[in-house]
Length: 322
Figure: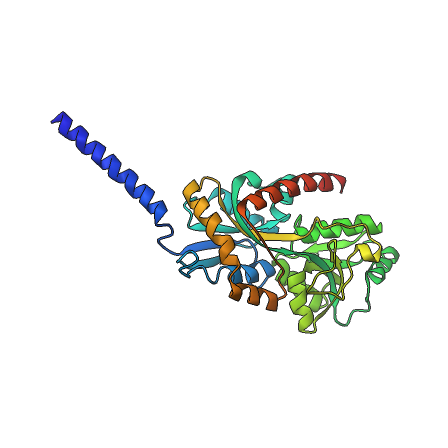
């Protein structure tokens, strides 16, 4: 009898192991969710919905991805939840923003760091830009800086939160121009920050190129400068900050991509890492991203791991200096 029980137990364990392996082999077997830690309508949300729209195709994951927004505190609310409460089962994905979550983890007061997450793939690189309302008297960054010098601390401008790319760009501008600005983080993210500029609640704003591109197309804003090393193909008429005499690099460029919580099974990570970059290359995705003024920059998991490490090193130095 003992031998019979032992044999049955071994058979059950074997079946359980086979089922577990088979589960990963058939992954995904149900729809997935991707958490975006910014509000609906902002650049991250807008792009996340585009790059995941073909997830249900047979040549992609074969299952759709639903976007869930958990905005607040410049992304901290969503990433805290993702690091501490999200299931590491492969069905809960998260959108990352670099330098945002790395800068926030360096600054402290959050429950995450780069070690809390496993990157899957990068879809875009969105530079910060300085925007003013369409009817603003400012027509160049020189106009903005001159006003700031004449009115210390009174040049109000919006951004998506503290220690996000917008804030880092603002800190760099203050240092490079030798001025004191009044940066006002908006609790509704990039979309809220842009609305504050258009409504005249602030004198200007630092926002994503993609958000600003759509707002300029609608005739609502002027874009005065790009926080990047080169002019952007979407805005060939807008000079970089360096071209306008300000020593500012590309540290605030917003890299966006997909990640999973630490502890997600490696076979699932491997499946996603092989599939998601190809999903981003879909022609429909590229067309919609281009129409929305959203620069794409596709990177594999290994490339993202290198980028995260390099950005962390850069931000450690930058934030200590600022």
